[in-house]
Length: 334
Image (cartoon, rainbow, N blue to C red; front, top):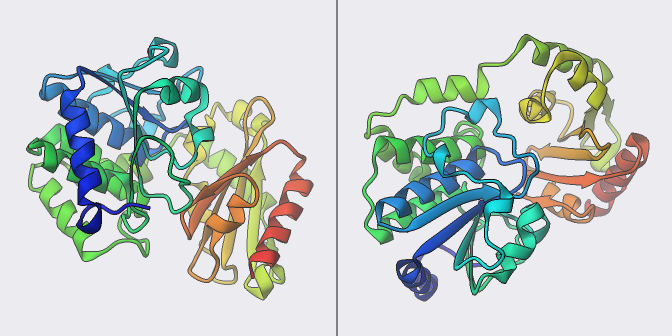
């Protein structure tokens, strides 16, 4: 794993030199992008465009869906469908991509590039690519993108700051998670100094939803199960959202990403798990822990990964089977 400086300074220098030599840069974030993934990619894309590079931003979903909560992000004119990324890109930067599988339809194209740079902060990242800037101590990939922009000599403006602030705020839970450090707040201060409306950003990210979301949330909470004996007696609370609920109330699966933050509130449970069903039947699990369980390791055992206290996975089994596997992985982790 690589950090943003110190002993890893040579890797930063190699990355900056490779980017400066490139005429065209393809920036790829993970499938079903969140605020940190898309914010990081758009910030890097706008910065590189300003330096004269030809830039494309993409992610490997078909169709590509930008969550409504991220529709305000500037730079989205840079986004192209996965099919428009060339078969052999000149230089690819993967942002916030914790595993190769998260590249989706762009996996083969990314690995065909002679220069593939991975910029990420997930502890579960195995370290792919020709250049790796992976810092598990960073609270968000956007923090590393800020460092990249500094090294490229790109000054912050409101558009860049909006994207970076969205990334940092998203992955720190609005600066509530343990990974938040004094340096995180220092970065937030520099971003706010550009004049961005952080209050409007936060309202859009966390305090705005459709009425349909409230109905889906109500049904999910009604299904919630509390298991005090799980996780070695630390407790588990879990629920799931069938696709039929989303279809009934006109809600996308991206809109319910924040459901896990509601489910993690009970004081009785250390771990929370939400299973969300895609149209094809795939169940995507999001889980959180409060400090005593490494859910990244738990999810890695289920084919996923993430952060120590916030991770995820995908599975195709029935709900009871998936929950039993998760329960067993929790027990093994204890």
